[in-house]
Structures are given as C-alpha cells and as structure tokens.
Amino acid sequence: MEPVGVLIQACASTGTESGLMQLEVVGKSYLEHQLDRVLVAFNRSDCVVVTTELKENRSVIDLCGRRGVQCYVGDRDDALGNCMRAARNHGFRSVVILKSDSPLIDPVLLVHMMSRYLQLADPQAYVGNRMKRSYPAGMEVEVTSVENLLESFLTASKWTDFADPTTLIRRGDLPNCRRVDVVQETDQSDWSLRLDTLADHQRLSRLLGLVKKYTLHEVMTVAGEHGLLARAPRSG
Image (cartoon, rainbow, N blue to C red; front, side):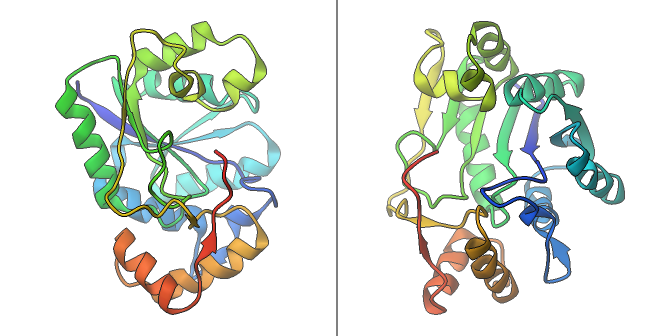
C-alpha cells in the first residue's frame, strides 16, 4: 500500500475571511504551524502543499520554497483534480488529505488514521473522521488511495463534485470503496479549532501561544482552561 504521502490543501483565501492563513502568530504563519505538526508525523519529502494559480496564493508557493516543502499548483476550481495530480506526480499510491484551516492538527491523530488505513491493506479503502463526527472541527483527517481519487475524478459530473476531493467517496458514489469511520470515545464534535473567521484567529492566536505540545488532549485542555473553546458549525 505504500508509499503514503500527505497533501495539505492550501489557499490564501482559506475560511470565510480571506488572508487569515498568512497572518503571523507566535512568529509563524498559520500554515507554518500546521506544517510543523505534519512534519512530526511525515518526512518532508512525503509532504506536498496543494494550492492554485491565483495571485493571492503566491505567498503559499513562496513559503513552501523557504521551508523546503514540495508544492503543487493547480486549478482554482478543481480541488479533486489537484489532489489527484499532485499525488500521482509525486508517486504516492495513497494520501492523507488535510485542509490548511487546521493549524492545530495533532500528529498523533495523523499517525493513528494512517495506521488504520494501512491495516486494511485495501487499495479501495477510505478512512476518515468527517462522516460520523466525534473530533473537533479543525481535526479533519482523511486517508485514501490515489485510485479512489482517480475514480472520483472520472465519475464527477458537477462543480460541487470537484470542490472537495472526497465528496463522492463520503457520499457513497464509488460502489467498490470501503469506507471506514474513525470515532473517538469522547465526543468533541461540538467544538471548533478551525481557522475560518477573524474571531477564530483571535482565539487560535492566543491558543498557539499557550500550548507546549502538539496533542489534541493538551489543546482542548488549555482551550477549556482559558475560555478559548468555540462551538463548531454543523457542516463540512
């Protein structure tokens, strides 16, 4: 089943208020904080930031160059195709898919999800935590094969099918895909650690200055102690 890579979908207009991802917090942009966490779980050579040709995403490309992280530049309206092509271009057979609105992603969760996927030894499997939610928003992790992404790309028929690389998989449109929900014992789905709005930035910038480790447990504990928890929107 290997090699497995990680794709971070990054756009300068991430969230409902553009430009948040580029803001500097505790000496780094939000994307750099996310990369720090991802690179605890993955080798740098296995990490690809997927962005678009839009002018505002030039900063994403420049950041990847400074950090020595691979970058794929694709179509602004084709997240599915971009992820598929990025994975194939880098020789990945399977990928962990993340979004750049998750600056506090837990490396332990990444390893756990990838391990669950590899244990299945099924090239048509999908392992994710976005269907039956139990993790906070901003802790979304999905693992699937490039074969599934290609089938999704060939099956997609409308714009919304291309806007999110796993829409068809989660919707059940791939008949041979084995979908596995990962659910944690403690339901934290009511809470959000996602970077979407200016209010999120105000909370997360404080939180990033307080946490010392990368674990979800510490993040939730510190957020609770300092009144930095916010309710999650019931979508996506």
